Length: 433
Image 1 (cartoon, one colour):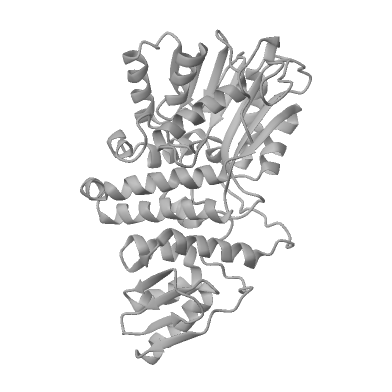
Image 2 (tube, rainbow, N blue to C red):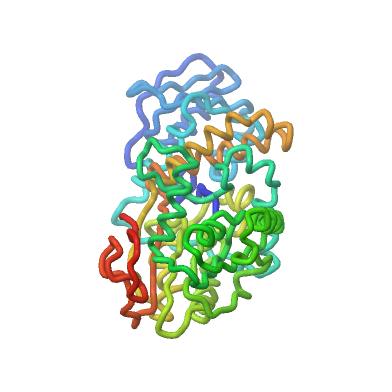
């Protein structure tokens, strides 16, 4: 799955700021403009930003240099921003009624950090909003909304393999292409894949990982996806690369997965399942893996604790998605069937780096994307990618890789470096943390 700006609180928190706004200087404008600027600055709290209104009002923080300058082009939208900035800011930005000059990522990161401080470490854990279930029909509609925008669009800014999930950077200076290949190898090593094993992949994107596992580790893969655009691309690629006998791409819902297989892997799909169906996913994994044996890996965007998700993201970018905390995933998916967790790794900063590369490439192709979808689309996706990078940098979002196996299975790696592999055969490195 792609990166998501599923923040742990609205972009502009309505909580009382833990630090009051910095002292500010005002330049001439109308009395109404100065009043609205003060109210908007109060909403931003201690985030150092210059505010410009169309009547000439400028609100400039004096304590430290502003990270950015926000230009509000219509005074009439300010009340909406004050009432519910989560949706209002995103809609105003994509419509061109709000501009952010300067470092957009730094500005949004400052907002996420301010929100985390406002929530308070010791406060009661928030309850996530009650969400509708992702039925088979609604899940397919939601995936179509985002992933079936066209392969030509995603080719503009993804890597050559078309991998739309967090990359893994052994070195921070690695290219996006190298990091995505490293991520796929990391997953294969964590799973200790052996030639001839059967693997289920739930949610396979354009098929890069399934083809990589078959080509480099000799396994047989059945990969499920409900994006018709992606499945057609993956099938064509498997045929061109001579792997059609080793990889099967199935256009179907994960709820129809059947076993038995040796390995279950899901990269970026859990966010689209929804908490109400975690039990269903757990049952699917339980049925797919043989009794007493089998292992798996879940790679997903998550949070440190449950919290409401961004309504703007739900409305405009990723309808029906929800990134869980580790506790929510464990209680819903793994614990009911007594799966044993072998390894948990958090690749939060790797996803921030991935998003930086995606955003840079997206900006280089912004003119082409504008001709394809229009300016409003470009602005919405710029905000989505920048906000996602900022959320990972600020710690509002996490990226978890969880390796698990049957609780009674003793044929598991003895160490992280691979000693005592599954089935007793030698294995390569089991990953790092």
